[in-house]
Image 1 (cartoon, rainbow, N blue to C red):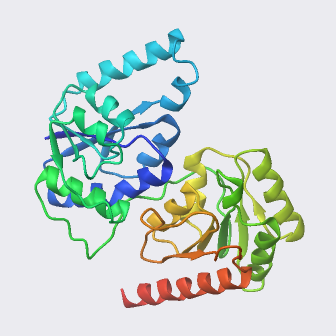
Image 2: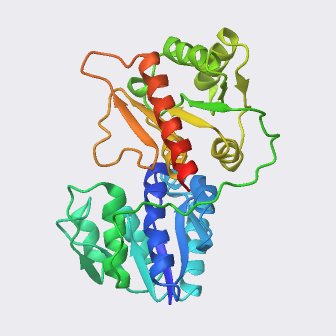
Length: 326
């Protein structure tokens, strides 16, 4: 059986789908999986060994020039590629109108959430079969239940395994114990103040951990350089492809991150991960992992660096105890 997964974005949503893929790989070894995803996240999808062909869309880019000839050519090429693969089933794991339209291009039966479960009920007009999954569950569990119903098995929700592999990468490894600081995020109100990142970095150095950080744009570079200037032992990783950052991230001792996709990736790798949420509720979409924790700022309050580092130490000790038991 040949199945296409449609989950185009965002990075966190893509990562939340991996446990469902892992369930399916264990319960339905007769099924092969391809994936359709936004071009920026193709390298993330490639981290799961069960995924075969990766089709890329560029909806975010296409929207900026919908009448451009190149946009139409790219969209047509995607349609041809999806139809040539002759899928037996498409699972729209996103439940949005845009993902449903993409799923439709494959000309195969589409399974998805029902009207009471989908994020955009209008998406269900494109589906051939729908399944009810309560909306008050975490996104990871919702997707696991959807895959189970669509493929005919009961996922073991008492366990959580993303199944992803840390890529090799080409950037030289960083010696010793490292703490990756993921300060970059999409909204200003979600950003932990630079002085708090510096405070956390100093505390980590005092605990024999080397802070590591990077950037993806000019504003993030300024923050990364400020941390490195205040804490000279900080390793600054230059702006790099996502797969390269994932390789360094996956080999870190622990991770402290803002509300950003790479924080979700760290927790999916099973790393001790502390997520600092300031303006958003982790609720049903926050990072989940065997050693992941979220610290949420009280209204009008802040999350102290000492609190974050103490939680990171607790998770690190927990992970090491778990390894000892194994």
